[in-house]
Amino acid sequence: MDKLSLLLVLALTLPGCAHVISEETRKQVDKNIDFSDVKMSADAFIGKKILVGGKIAGVRNYNEGGRMEVVQFTLDNTGFPIEVSRSAGRFIATSPDFIDPIIYKAGRLVTLAGEVKGKKTGTVDGAEYTFPVIGIKEIFAWKQNEDEKGFTPPPLLSIIITTPMTSATMFRSGTARPDRSSANDFKIKNIILLAECQKE
Image (tube, rainbow, N blue to C red; front, side, top):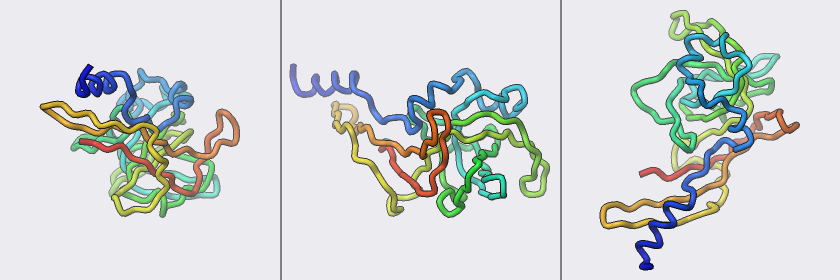
């Protein structure tokens, strides 16, 4: 088998970028639930676990915990929010813990798994708006630029695949994880662990 054929076989049999949300948490997610349905009728999905992501619009903290307003974007197969001109709407992600607004600042992309808690009425630019409320179980924050400091675990897999038509670099990286106080109780940690997948 020549070198090119071997690389193509490896490309088909080895994983690419790892998903940023742990497999344990993703097993709890109902993959049949679309965010647009939750946006329309959040109360019908109370107690369901979903995977969502997007861009942070703002963070506020109260005595009972933190709230993060997020503009939803579709996720790719690694959990990266794909920024396009469309969104199914905004949602509020909640935590019983303090959410640091410097770390989780407006404009940062996040991916999270959480439990639908219902809905909350608020305002966006003065207009009344109904937000689905999602309790955070696990969250991942993405780098905003290459110069941003953060912990990046070393890649577990690195392979370069080259064909006459295209070239790409695939790698599997470590992922950020919140602290766990128990098997089913994920908490946000007030430091940011960052990793990213190279995209063509």
